[in-house]
Length: 138
Image (cartoon, rainbow, N blue to C red; front, side):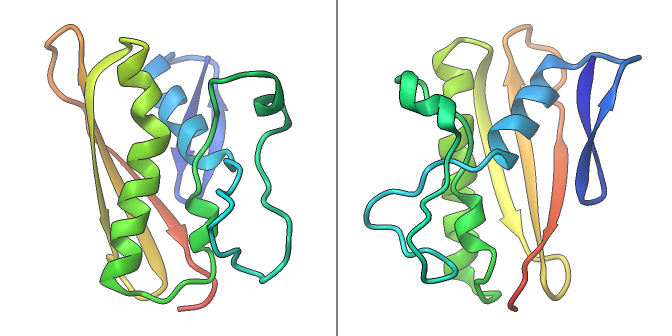
């Protein structure tokens, strides 16, 4: 079983298992708790985050949700790349992959694309996964 990415959402695939892809999707698209100095997109006080992080030093998810109302700027792309890389670092630390490269782009107006290239331990060909998300206020 694995999660697969289909346009703008994840789906469960019971036929073809891919642990690396599933870990990437969960890491990127689960909301991590915002840091105390992060500016929240709605100006509120909900810093989100997965409740299970309360009981573990290993945090799950990314802060990509903080970008949901951002403009299409190069500084936002840098933050998206930083947040994505930060959320995937655990895979390197747990020796599931050698390294992970993330590239953030805006292929069209209001769309953020993340391209993730994990270097596998087996020295197999480096897979490349692309995920697109619509930003609300571009």
